[in-house]
Length: 182
Image (cartoon, rainbow, N blue to C red; front, side):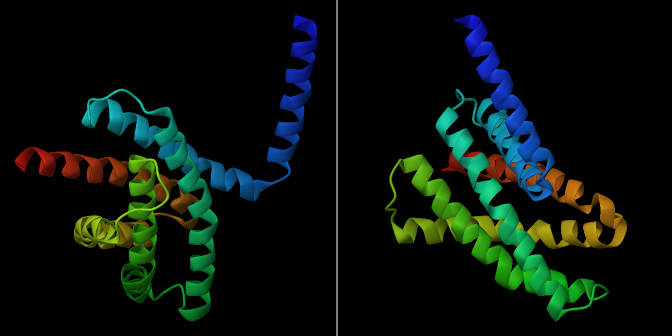
């Protein structure tokens, strides 16, 4: 029976590997999901000092997996509207349109995961959004500027993944510090 299981796993792995290798867009979406899962594990263990919640961790990875194509789509829209050299306008457009949209989805998703239900209190979501956007608007424009000006284009995706990883940890840290003050 073990040999049947081994054969099944080998066949499954080979199909999975072929699918991955033939679909680079899937790989691009898996990377931020892995960074998201890693940031959840680190934030839960080191910042929140709690046990790892596997469902929350996987759902956050799923959120990052889904949002990657959305962010790519937004990037194509911005590319059509603004020339590549318009760095400051691109950042402004991101900060005023895309980031609030993403963080509205993000805080709504986090509420749903935390409360383990699909319906959440909209005033709580708006409060969370205000909290997140205060942090985002303080730091993210500078991080985007560094990405646009100093990071070579082939490395920008890796830079964005790393920044997202660290920024996720920073937001959780600030949130935990705020809870201690209250």
